[in-house]
Image 1 (cartoon, rainbow, N blue to C red):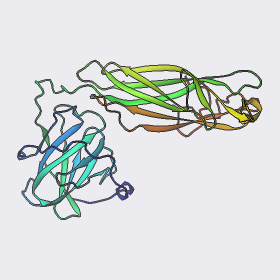
Image 2: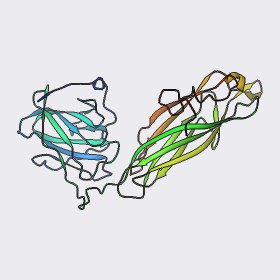
Image 3: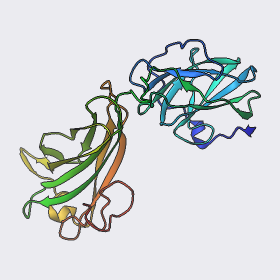
Length: 307
């Protein structure tokens, strides 16, 4: 028996809850789960092995959880009680069995196993029999559509234009990973926010450029796109270069470029993106200093140009 432990994440509300709330059929002795959509919206039935009423039910999935809810509208806590993104704890109304709808950030394997524990006293946990799949998997063990697993990105190949120009060019390198499964592939998106005071002029115009990426199932695919931004300000009736972005103005400074890295679900729904901040450091001549820049968003100087 394990005593309940709450991480700091338990002080906040769970991430987004399930979009659909569908009651599952009666649970088997061990509990079971099914999905009629894209295997990221799961209808889970659970049961206390001893038939005792419970206060909390914990589910441990093989994929990260986005959110969960009970039929009576109770919000579940992602990451509780062990801090894992694959774990979710649901409060239940002192009953011996029930249902929960769980939304995951990527598709569950068709015949995937969900581990679970139950708290009968509100303070300790008892391990329970695994929750098994009730899906028709055709004997393959995996018939769910392939899904976008992750999108990563970094920047390189910065170029400058002229002694008084604020125009900067760089290349976004993105990598999209698709899980195994059925279908032709998966999709993701990279949204790029220009530095404060600048606007993109290529391949489109505005503060934000959205770059789509797609790739085949069970592979990682690369995307490379060249972008340019300029920084202009009004001076009376004229539009002139922003002095903070000329070679002299940007020398020995750092400009921030933010990227939002998002996956689409197999049904085409955009998921919340991971935001990373790239720090572009300029040397005394206004050129990019790759050693002092952080162009993959890991919070550390790169030490060299990334390839």
